[in-house]
Image (cartoon, rainbow, N blue to C red; front, side, top):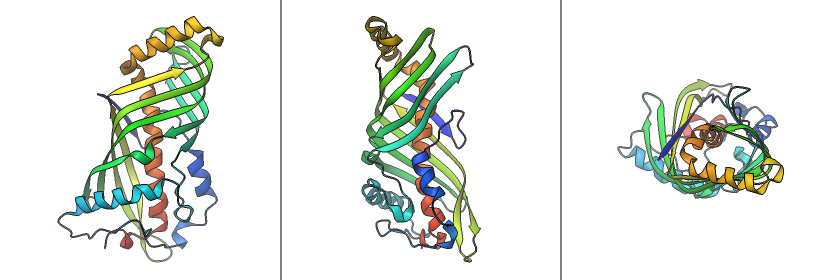
Length: 261
C-alpha cells in the first residue's frame, strides 16, 4: 500500500473552481438557516451508537450527492471537474511539473462510507471511505524529471488508482451568526489515502516520439510507488477539497442544532 497525505493547506496548488464559483455567487450563507437535506438523517447527540448512526446517514446520503444539489451548493460529482490541477515537486531546475487546465475525476459516487469516529466534546470527527477505482483524466502538460529521467510532453492523460482507502479528519468550532444560531466552522482538516496500485498513461510524450513515450510510460508504471509519492499530494488534495467544500457548504447553510438533535 502507498500512503499519501494532504493537509488543509497542501504544498501543491489546487483550486476546485467548479465548487468555488458556486460559493462565490451564493448569498451570505448564515442568512439562510436551512434545515438538513431530507436525505440526511440527523443523529442524536447522546446516542450510544453515534458513530454507527453517522455511517448509516452518510451511506444514505452519498447516492443523493451524485448529481449535486444546488439548494445546498453541492457540485455534480458524476463526474467532478477540477480546474487548474497541478503537481509541482522539487525545484525549478529539478523536479516534476504536471498541469491540467481541466481535470475530470471519476469514481467518487462509488465511494463506500466504512466507518466514523465522532467526538462532540473535543469537536473532532473522522471519516473512513473506500473506493475500488478513482480515475483522473484530462489534457496534461509535463516538464521536469520522473525520478532520474527527463520528461516533456503534452496530450491526453489518465491516472487511475485502485483500491483506495481515504481517511478524512477535521476539527471544528461553533460560531454564532446574525440569525442567533450556531454554525459549524472547520478549523483544521486532513486527508490521507492508501492505494494498492496506480496506473499512469501519458499520450504524446516527447513530441510524439512513440519509442521514447512508450518507454517512459513503462518506466512510470514499473516505478508507480515512487511516482505516487510525487503526484499523490495533488490527488489527495483534490479529494480533500471535495470533502471540505461539501461539508463547508452544508454547514454554512444549516445551523448546528439541525445536525445533531
